Length: 251
Image 1 (cartoon, rainbow, N blue to C red):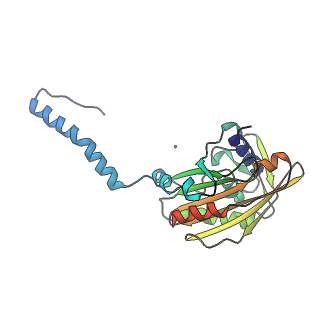
Image 2 (cartoon, helix red, strand yellow; image 1 turned 180 degrees about the horizontal axis):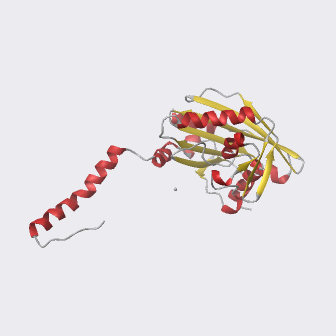
Image 3 (cartoon, rainbow, N blue to C red; image 1 turned 60 degrees about the vertical axis):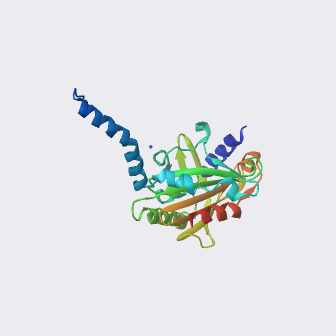
């Protein structure tokens, strides 16, 4: 099984487990139009520069790189095979406890809250034997949306201690417990949690965290897919190197 397929499968288990123109015969008019057309690219470029980068462009520049993480980590864009993806959008996910929705989103690299753009990369050394680590950056340009997203996730952690069940595309599964964890101060606000699940009688622990820096929220999630499918217990912690490198880039 391909590494990406295994990682994606583990994630699914873990949460179970978007002119018309007019001519003229006047040569002077034609000349003026040609001159205007020649200047149009320059004008468009200037307007673009004045407007600044789009939310998606911002995230592409803010996402940590392989060189910045170091330590043998391979960092690449997460492009999960549709066959192994639990859900492609928030709308596909239903839960027995609506308040727990942010946790389900975090565990499946879906956007947190209502960002204008989001981007997920995968940073791991060996997804067959070690944890799969995901970084999802969310950009919120509307005032208060980033804070609201963090508040929703915090409430989910506090309210879903007894676990929750998530369903999407015919798949269903249960998280048994959710527990808040201590986290080093980072950005403007931060939180962390762990969750346990049982698969074929074996308990697995996954870890998540979120850090808000102004209007960007970085979400981290780690799960050991290899352990889940091979049937031995796991406790996939978010690597300090990944957290440190990405948080530093957002500060």
